[in-house]
Image (tube, rainbow over all chains, first blue to last red; front, side, top):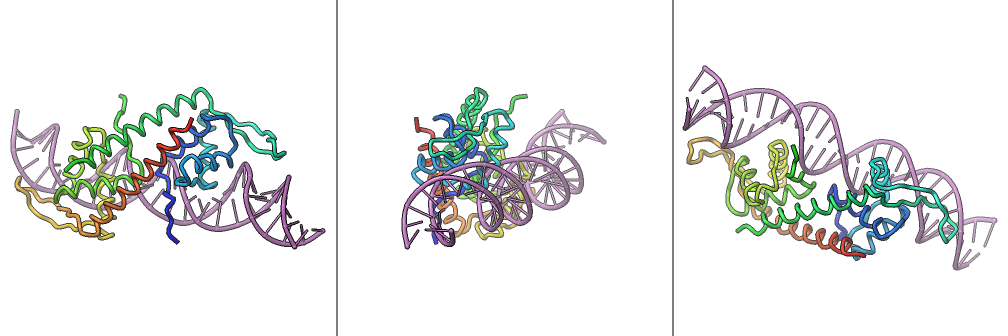
Amino acid sequence: MPKNKADLLQGTLDMLILKSLSLGELHGYGIIQRIRQLSDEMLNVEQGSLYPALYRIEQKGWVSARWDVHETGREAKFYKLTRAGRKQLETQEASWDRLCLAIAKVRQAT
Amino acid sequence: MPKNKADLLQGTLDMLILKSLSLGELHGYGIIQRIRQLSDEMLNVEQGSLYPALYRIEQKGWVSARWDVHETGREAKFYKLTRAGRKQLETQEASWDRLCLAIAKVRQAT
DNA sequence: GATGCATGCTTTGACAATCTAGGTATCGAC
DNA sequence: GTCGATACCTAGATTGTCAAAGCATGCATC
C-alpha cells in the first residue's frame, strides 16, 4: 500500500494549526479536516499529533479554547486564535519562508 | 543576541548533505561549510547534528566514506555519494517539493 | 434495539532527529 | 607556547510526531 501522504516535518504543524484557525474559530477535529481539505488531501494530521499540539499551543497563549455545542448538537472544544497567536503565525510563516529560500539556494547550486 | 539562523527542520538535513555531496566528494567539516556558504549563511549545521547524520546515511548506503589526506596535509574522512544516494536525493527533493506545495496551498487559503 | 460508522476528545508509549555540550587531536600564526 | 581554525566523535537531553489504544455521542440501517 503506497503512502503518498507526506509525514509532517517537525515544526510545521503549529503553523498549519494557527493558519487554519486564522480562517475562523474551529474545533480540533475540524482543524484536521480543514488542513486536509486545503492541502488537497496531501497533508493528513493525526489526532495523536493534533491534540498534544493544541495543548502546547494553548499553554503558550496562542489560542484560547472553550467548550460549546455546535449546530449538529454535539459538544466540542472550540479554539480561537489570540492576538499573540496571530503574531506567532506571522513569525512562523516568515521563518518558513526563510528556510525555503535557504534550501532553494542550496539546491540550485551546481 | 538575536539568532537569525534557522534551526533545521527534521528531515531536511539528509537532503542538504546529499545535495552538497552531489557537487563532489567532501569531508564532514567541509559539508558544514559548503551548506553554510551555499545558503548565504542562513543554514548552520551543528557538528553534533552532522556526524550522527553522516553515520546514519552511510549505514543506509547513500554515501561511501574513506580516510584520506587532503592538500593541506591533514587527514579527513571523505564522503562520496553512491548511486543509491543520488536516487535518494531525488526522492527527498521530490517529497520536499510536495510538502512545500501542500503548505503553500494551506497558506494561500483565505 | 443492535450494529456500524463518522464524529469528537484524550492518553500512552515509542521513536527519530536535532541540539548542547563536552571530548580529542593537528596545524599554523603570533 | 598559546590560541584559533580545522577535523572528528560521543553522550545526554529535548522535542515533536506517530501509532494505537480508549471512551462517548449521534445517526442511519437492518
